[in-house]
Amino acid sequence: MNNSVENRPLLGALLVVLSMSGLGFIDNFIRLIAEQAGLWQFHFTRSVIICATILLLARVFNWRLRPKNWRAVAVRSGFFSTAMVLYFGAAGMMPIAQVAAGLFTSPIFVLVISALFLNVRIGVWRILAVALGFAGVVLILRPDAAALSVLTTIPVIAGLLYALSSIATRRWCEGETTMTLIMGLFSALGLWGLVGLLVFSTVSVPASVSAELPFFTAGWVAPSGVFMFWVMVQAFGSLIAVGLLTRGYQLVEVSFVAVFEYAFLISAAFWAYMLWGQTLDMRSLLGIGLIIVAGVIIAVRSR
Image 1 (cartoon, rainbow, N blue to C red):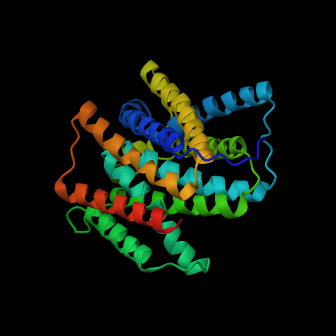
Image 2 (image 1 turned 135 degrees about the vertical axis):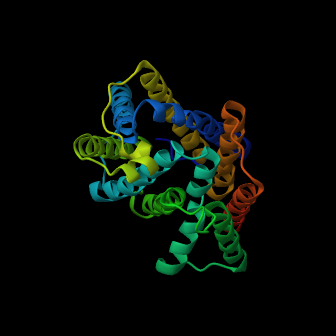
Image 3 (image 1 turned 45 degrees about the horizontal axis):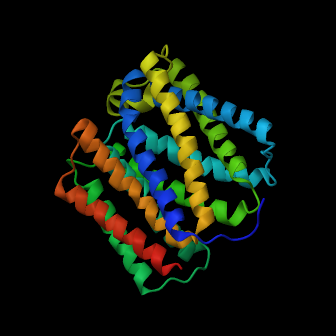
């Protein structure tokens, strides 16, 4: 591997924007997958496709996949995969822009966790960012008795777990290759899928729970052509997007390029409107805007 540091900010930013915009587009089709099968079948099938592809590419290009620190990679994969289970589960039942906004609270959680438990000092601007981000979450969750439900909290819990995976990546997984970490993530997601399939294909779920969380509680069904097509799109689209994102982070300083990940929110909301006519009310739009502003402040002040 070439250890020289490249500094090409415009290209790095472009690659990140392309990556996140692509993910914002393909994640809109989770609703089609949710109409055909459940969350666990989706994760198991997609993970098998991705892991098989990585193993084939590793054999061709002689990539190292074995972790240097198995425990660190396992913990990071556990946090990350659980976040993705919650994110995709919510995406199958909620507007994608709202789900993405919950996931992108992760920089706020990283800052709070770092300040409370890792002795990282933060200034006034980043404290303000946390306050803005919290206000955005409150607006999106609508914490009133009529609107609050288990489902609305799931994306924010995903954001917390995603933040923990980010901290684990930086603190414990130094020296691991990108493909090692990707393989660990999708292996964990495949295991989640297998366990979920075994549970929900054999256990009777109360009707009230099944009605509120249908995508979460579905067991195995015979895969349709539509299901397999969109799972393939998700699998290979995710691999390409992760490749672009990884290259983007190699070309420019991390705190600069991280801001451009918010292209995902814009892309997800735009395609949700264009494809499905999904719109968000002003309260939700304001909440998403506050979360974006908070993330930008955190990224800029962390340089």
